[in-house]
Image: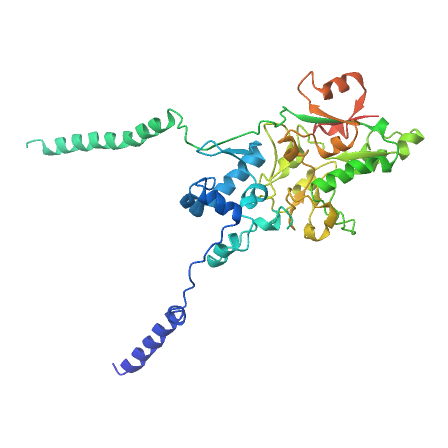
Length: 132
Length: 265
């Protein structure tokens, strides 16, 4: 038991090192991003018309929806989405989604940056379809 | 409780059957009767439909390479083709011009008429009925669309292996060695159509995006009637009428890919 001190000291150093990421970042948690709705999107929200699906579903599942849309448009040539309320949408990221959400930097990017995801949609899809 | 084990097994068996049928019954209940409030997808009301889209190019109407420019330009503009790439090894082509002995190598006889020999022919993806590129693609990024016979690409899935380019006997496919966005002329951008990214293969899509809204392909529209477009399997379509009345040839027909682009020479 003559090594007791060394072992305890070693364990203490190990513990400090292993918890380093936690205590170095303590209290530095970034605030959840605040999204700004573009005027068209805000108007749809205020009038109760909303997005293609309820807000919660869009927040949680928009990536799956976009994936399904892509499949439907490219593979099955079915380009019209009929919402639960019977309203029809052209399934197009640039021409429909970004038509309302015309502020990619304050809408898409804020959450994506916060969640540290880098979707490569914009490598091909044009992010300001109206060319403003 | 004399036969307790027997009773236990009986009960367990009945419970298992009960638990097992519940999900199946639920599934039956869910599949019956369409819920009116469920979202669904459909084709646009104005979408053009066909079993197999086909094209007849009346080459008698074109006399020089200059006559082909309007069609090529219309395509380039509507699909954001990076035409500013100067290195010919890297260039992207959806529709372009070729001489007879390049376009129809098996039909070029030793002594061709001078007019045919020096004429420019419009060539593009043939949207084969039996496409070799589709068989070569390891990710099913390129596929023969069931609904209208277009050989289409899903750029999201393309891994850039270029097997399809090797498989295509018509050289109809181009690979993006560079980021194409830097090479699209500023005035020719179509903001309603996506660009491509570095590392994917691309080719003519028979203007699937225009057919979906009831428009004919951009080159057909720009051709002033020299290119005829329609359903190959509708005996009353314009394409079939023209094919009935004219002698036509196809590119490298003997390879068995069944090209859907016909040429009146």
